[in-house]
Image (spheres, rainbow, N blue to C red):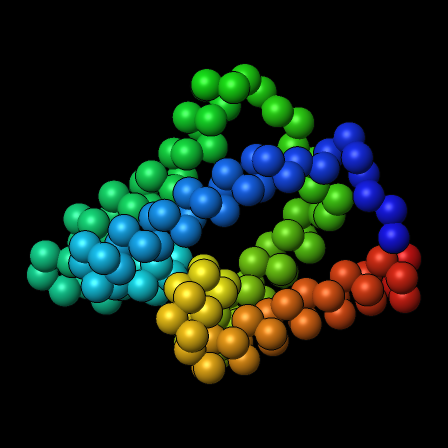
Length: 143
């Protein structure tokens, strides 16, 4: 295994993880809700009275964050080593997986594991194992 030292960013990854953890803790502390992106987005599709504003604000902030980062830090190189077809297929499969897994990586991996949920542990192991297997197959068997 080789590490691409030019693109190895442990400090920004650590900072991002800390911000995500803080956001998850604040959301559960002040509203009793789990920070699961698929659940937040899905809740907009089947919203209840008084439940739309915080969901919309959260998603707006999530989509605005990269633009604010770019305005503050400057342009950064973005490289995706996949075709648009593969990106769309991957997105559809992730969406399907979140429905079958009753949540996404942020809901199970960040919030569920921090609450010591056995169901979230199994879901996170499935997410990670599937990701490892997919990378192995795509890079070593089909390449």
